[in-house]
Each structure stands twice: as C-alpha cells, then as structure tokens.
Length: 110
Length: 114
Figure: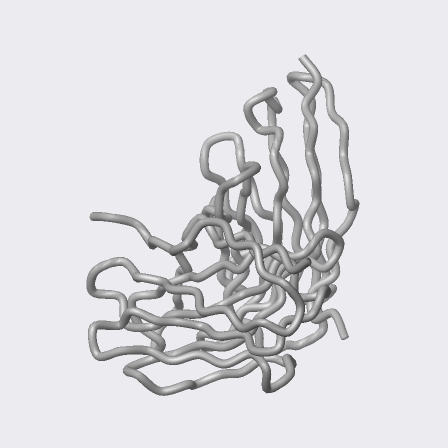
C-alpha cells in the first residue's frame, strides 16, 4: 500500500512557467514532509521541507503548500528553468521512517 | 564535510549470487537507512540502523539484510539474487533519530542482475 501518493507522473512546462506537483497521505502521524530533487546518476537531494504546523513555506522559487485537513501537500516551482528538469519526490515521515511518493519527472522546455 | 559515500557504484551479478553493498554516512551521523529505487516504484524503504541496531524494517524478504558497525558505516547484503533485485540501492544518513530528521542520500549503487 502506497503511503504517499504523488501526481502527476510526468510534467512538461515551458521556461518561466509554474510547475506544480501534488502529494496526498493518509497517516496523520506523519510530522515531516520533505521534497527531494534527483538528477540522473545522483542520489536524491533535499530541496525543501515543511512541518504540519504551517500551511506554506517558501525558499526562493520553491514553495510548499500544506493542507492538513485534506492531508495534501504540493510543491510549486515558480519561473521554472531548464536546470530544474529532474525527478521530484515527495515524502512523509514519522520518527526516522520515511515514505516516498513514486516521483514526478519534470521537463522544462527552453 | 564529506557527503554520504557508497561503494561500489555499479555491480553486475547473476541470479543466485549474493552481493554486499557498503555505505559510509556523513561524519557524526548515527542513523543509516537503505532504500531500493526502481522505475515506477519510487523509493522503497528497506531498513534503518542506529547505533548498530536495526530500528525499522520495510516489507522486503529475508534475503535482504544489513548491519551497522561501531563507526556507523553500514552494509547491506542480498542473497540468492533474483532478476527483480535489479535496482538502484540508496543509502541515507541522518544525524539523530529522536528529532525531526533530514536524510542525506548517497549517489547509490546500481545493481544489475543477469
């Protein structure tokens, strides 16, 4: 059973556009929600993370929106750039056990 | 600080063989987790070690095992390899298991089973 459901599986965005990736979870015990970015041949790298006590967190062009009642959270990439082309994973954790979404392959077209 | 290192980076084995993968965490990190990454399945949690003890385990068969040494370095072993074990195996280290943890991933070991 997939603990964290991620969509879409793939996404194509024009340079300068907004990329939006969504995740949903069921377990209300999750208390940490990170997003990871992975380039080919590399391990995932932490991009941005949020705790459930806030509804939004912004770091540069990256924003997490968190809806606790709906048990959903999303990643928004503003002014998307070709260098953002990568696979993005959402995750949810309780303690030190992490559950990952299945990933979204983002392609930003110049 | 050096990042998480994994060796070897690539492995080719045949069915029935066994394999051992190694992970050196970031200095000072005591928790090491292992994941299997396959296309379409994302990252599947294998197990987590802290202070040489397995603290969490995912839903993988007993052919998958691991251990952690006193210096926090960790190894995972897969016995009786199957074709479906072909995957990228990722190791992640965290500083502490009793707080909100950020996981730092290594580059992975690409295992191909023929």
